[in-house]
Length: 262
Image (tube, rainbow, N blue to C red; front, side, top):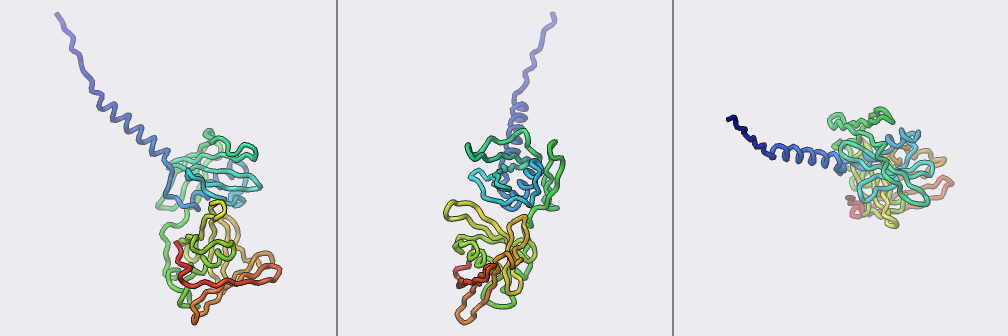
């Protein structure tokens, strides 16, 4: 009499596969914590700009949220982007009801090429866009040495002092990092509301110039504030001279201890 043989299948391979898929999904949805605020802003400005018909350079970066999202604004409208390891999704702010829902239907894929320093943003709505990421490890000798005009203060310290004066930010609240060959990224959170502020800064001879990411250098002195600096080697003081477009001047002095930035 023929008999049947029952074959017992182990559940182990299935469990392993399911766990692998779960881990993969979790990793895909994990926020990218190692991106700089500049990179997050560039991704958000390009992505939202393409969706809404704005130039990326028309946006200002306003702040970051507790969940890591970056907030940008243009023409009185606020948007935020939540960036994950392989995707970005956005939401808008309404004057009456606050932040709206995340627009999952507009989610875009992110493909990073860290070797080339680029990221591709792609979706059916916007097609495929490429942007450059900010330099991560660029430290030319000239920005780690004191400037040629003095032996007390580096260009980075001069930029920290200038941004402190221009925006009334305490120097000890300011963080600074290298940006390119001869500029710096200077940032801080406002004491009044905790909002993030970030700027580029560089030293040109006796002048200090700055820019908001995506905008021009503020060196049109018919309309922009002129920032100059001088160094008193005897008293070991750096003085920032702030000249407004209408002609009035004021100055603030710093000693080296005040300019030990984060």
